[in-house]
Image (cartoon, one colour):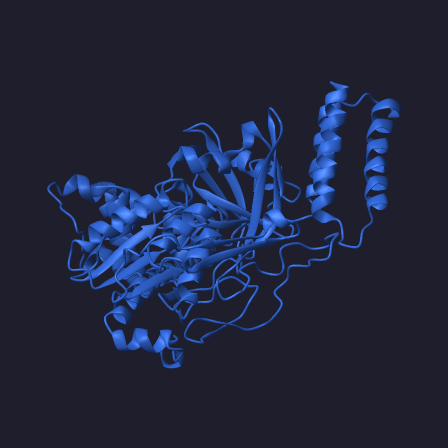
Length: 551
């Protein structure tokens, strides 16, 4: 056992030091560093006051070194290789969140549509500070993923810190089997606008995307929307094969650059496109669009083949190489960066703090140019050509999703209205029915003041001379709270209507119907449809004159 672990330490150290040593570091310094760490390892095993498990010590040493690099270099135990396995298996037991790390925080890159996390209102950018009883500050992504996942039906509590919220929010979630569909939904949104929601880049993503587009090509397709919002990425090959569907054969798609020659590669389009060049394309992105999503949207943007609409993407442009260390462990090490055809770097600059190396692969210039001479910055994800903000969840909406009230109402509505068909469209009066249902069933989310009003009779003895005064005050405050509730409903009427239509469609037709219904009131999708209807506007953007169109 000891010899095997010593061999593993030497192998890992050689591999790691090849990746993080400065270009000026001499061979002698490298050998001395390896020898010093091996000596510390052996001394601990031989002389520490307590007997140490060699395997655990070597695992701790490896993890400690990797923490000094970047959030994506990881020591993976096969039993915890969830993300790698998801790419091929396509399902797991969990709550449906894509995790990432930003400096010292475990963050939600994006919740998956239709999963427990999404239904209860967990949002992209939420910081997870506690998983059940475990604080997350020192957890790496593998450890966090292992804690979040589990047996279907088991409960999980996440403590979330959200921007703009003073107190942390606790979410109790029930784990379900999370299936990872590559194409969440595809179809025509109107007479000529095709829509494809691409949720992942896994083994069969490009094939599924091609089938969806070919099916749309058989209709009266006049424009195409590819929705990459919340898509965290996946396989590089899937992103490149997807770009092949739009870009002329032979053109450069992507370049990877690393410190060693085998990391430096160029990838070119290998087939004629299947999307007619006369068909305008829009790509929808947001802060949850990462990695392969940024590659696809960035390639089409560089070649002026598609208009990018939405919000700035996540900024993850690092290449990881997976190496088998032992029969039960793998090393996932960042070995290169992605560069788009224009030469710009996707990766944001603040990937780590207090790092032990000088980054020799930073963007070498500040401005890059598309085929039509449009200007782009570097080192911060993909910037949209047309900025459109998604609707922010209000406090009322968050509470309604957390308590699953949209879903509960949808179940009740479908049960009491047999024969409903899709598509599902409600009149605004349905929001009033929803509000009345919540009030009558005592489910409308209550504020701290409202709860105090309901329990105030316990504060004053009914025989006290001030009891009647207290009752009058309670009645007046209760009226004020009811007025506030109605005002909240009025302000959020459109969002509540969208939530009702989405959940009723989900109950009737499942996940695909849910996605389709959610688009009816989606400002980003509606702006894309509006833009694509005007070839003049699209051409102005792709020619480098979008100023009048940015929202």
